[in-house]
Length: 462
View 1 (tube, one colour):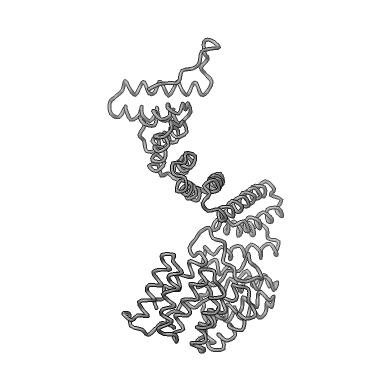
View 2 (cartoon, rainbow, N blue to C red):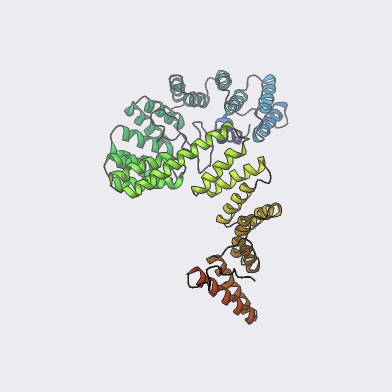
């Protein structure tokens, strides 16, 4: 079986590569500090070690490929059917049970997953990686006692298996047996000097064991080796907090926030550090952001419960836009439009977002749809800003006037068109634009006085 099948399932399960994902904690000792191993607790070579000896054209291999394609297409039940047929042909292949267990895990059918991981172990009882795989699954489901038995067996069968040592360390950490946890993480690091997760985990265990200097050595090395390791930065901050080095704690938590800005935990920690430093205005900014994130969490829960309700997605989109998460807002406005085609508010909201992302043509396209259905001043205004940004000043001025805007953007449009006309030799038209820009500037500055109380300053026309 190709190696990337298992990796595909792992990424699907834990959300690999997402900047906004919360850290993937696998221990009850500290769900806000310790990451799971990068490989998902399994040796990257598990599927290779258990590969079926079938030829690429054999029925079993064909069914494996069908299962792989079904998982890629998000059709797990089809994958289960294909793997079940393969198992019917060759019930002695542990890799087939392992694969089917992965799919059941993906589907949330944990009883079936556990049964298949156990069948894989029974088919190859001397395979340390299969014990580790089942142990990791059990650990993530809270069955830590059974998981510990599997990790013990894994290191008994293969004492040079760093992932199993690390995973056993996580169990020890959850039991608050810090010395044993440190010993296991140290063994994993000894076997694999570049095992960054084990280094982070040992640093956290050292901190819990009140060995703060040693903890900081491990954690600083972790972020040196992997600068985008969010929870390692957070762990550094936690150590600094215990050392009462609050300024350093703020810096460390800030790094975590940069990497995962939608996770409130880092903000809560920085808020506490800022309070200790009596930087109350900065702490208040974090408090407001924490409340915003709480609102986002509630809206996300509502969207998960009612994924076909455009009003919920609209509320979430607007909340994201207000919080400066423009990319996320675009995605949610797009969901609204998919559920309710032609939704004016969503199109205008998305157009504003495209404008902030400097994707001017998409902003213009959304405004065109709105304007075709409804002469919306807001759509004209947004489209005018887009035309101005791409230096189509004629269209920008026309749209600003349709939106009845009298502001600095219109002044800028006239000034830039005047400069453009000067370059092409249209001096008379350029002077007209300069005069209009000056008139607008004076009006905006309050320097123009109507001759009568009833007289209004006329809006300039092209």
